[in-house]
Length: 457
Ligand code: ATP
Ligand code: MG
Image (cartoon, rainbow, N blue to C red; front, side, top):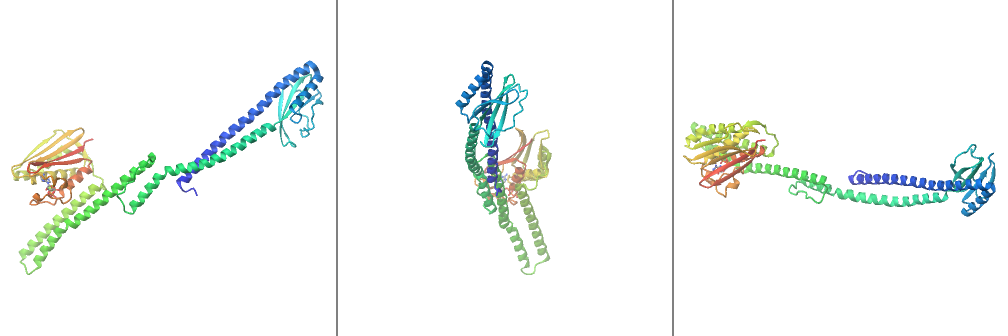
């Protein structure tokens, strides 16, 4: 019955409310009872002092008259007064005909020197009476008693009002508690609905924020982040599938064409050898493309963590420049290197960073005509290592520039050069996996500049 969070919270509110209310009632009831009793006792003490005075001044006779007046004034059914002689015999008494249910046993009054109070239960009245004993002097004792029915009625009334108010407030607490719990949990219901939609395959709808509590909003933020991540991963998978369908098909088709041509008619051994060579080359390039695509997908998905270690990025740049110096020499391209002298340490995967920089330098040399210039720079700015690779090559048109990061994208003008169009996608995936940023500016016919920023902290 109390499986849902709303009903459990309601039960908790209600229990808390009931316990607190009963506690408050208990304290108030106790205080009221004590105060009422105290008021009667104070009255007894005042009257007692008066009786002592009268007894001492006028003796028993005057006291008997006072007793008559006092009890008749208050009502003989409400109050009684009796006087005990030193040998504890009742020698004077008010009209006692309504007080037959007083306990018969004489109280222990020998040697009574101080006022004494007692509370007795009266069977016939089905209530209680407060009794007071006052030593009058010379061994005489005055006993007076009054019914507590007025106080009992007052307390009973108080209890009745409390029970009525308590029931009403308890019902309100249940309703209000249930309303508040339901309201504060509506956000969770929305989260659940969206999670259901995600499991049904709808990954585009994010959960909106609607005046929910901070906890629910944090939950919504996490779920939205998770949903967008799943969305990216699925899109990634779709892109790879599309790439396989479009771009890996052509090398396979080429290989099939080669095999078909060789099979049509009897060929010489040399032609067979040429065909095998060409097929092996296509296979190698195909395997290379598949590996690069897997690497890009892996980096983008962030599934396998990078093998990060402190690496000296200035040394990596020098190594890459060294590696490509024969190519630059072949094309008579001047490669200038402006790198900070001291080691610049960043946390990263050495071989991946090497591949990224090699790809960029490869592009710069590939798309720059003979006699051109390439500049490699490394500086530190606000805790960021900033690497720029600038060339004076053919540049990229404004139309192509936004697409160069896409897998297999190659500008029309560069189709005459070798390549698959995967290089920049790999570079970007590597830099992003390192938490860095990469940008490219290019002017057609003038040159291209790529800038990488990686945190050194
Ligand atoms: P791969 O890198 O796989 O060998 P690629 O170099 O053609 O092939 P990317 O490195 O991804 O592929 O580059 C994509 C396209 O961007 C290139 O085909 C070219 O059109 C353009 N591009 C990249 N770098 C430069 C550059 N420095 N100058 C001019 N164009 C460039
Ligand atoms: Mg390239």
